[in-house]
Length: 146
Image 1 (cartoon, rainbow, N blue to C red):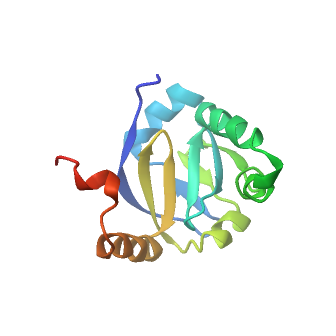
Image 2: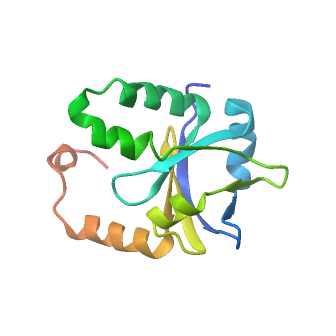
């Protein structure tokens, strides 16, 4: 299971209760990988991170081991983490607190980031991506072969 990589973007909608339908292409893998158990927390870029539970536990342990000088970041990542489960209708509830912190409206984008997902407000993601593309290419990518 360690070879599983989540990739690609899905335009989705949050319903009035803040529930998100998990895209069909990820449902079976998430059921096999973590029994549909996920953890959602804040991301420093203003979106949310959605982790399969085993991946979250590895990330959580690394964050918990950080020194006191990183206490503020521990609060961001661990203090706002919410455990959720994919329900029988293949939906995940995003808490009102996390929706507010990421500025999520009804139109959202779920982006596969390898071991986890990012959940963005669609307009915020478009603005962030435009900013990235308008900026200089990082040194790490300058010699990268496409």
